[in-house]
Image (tube, rainbow, N blue to C red; front, side):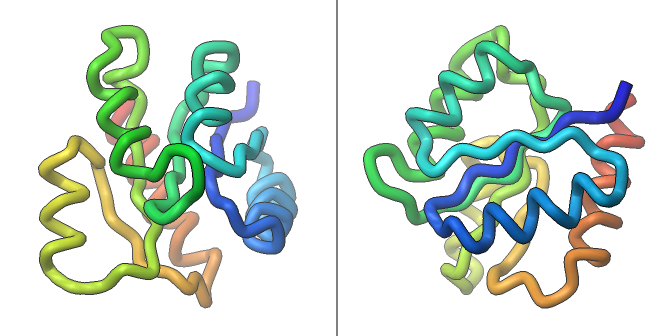
Length: 125
């Protein structure tokens, strides 16, 4: 069975491009446009990894990550934070909140991001 990526971002173009790219590489991909929708999907789908944007409406990435970490059913799912916020404080906050990796947007090379995802999944499995 294909590994499952949950891609969470409020940018519909980013979701569409990511979904198309990762699907073409053999992954199962689900998408959510905010943290609340992501938490609902995670409970149903149990993805292998979550790519989580920080700045989103309704529930931002930090709140979503905290909710995932607080639930023993989801705390073990690796989360890679995606954000346009740059600087050491964003990186530190990502790791302090429990993310396994931090990746800056805009994403100009999906292949590079895929290498990071592959490494995370390989280390997990």
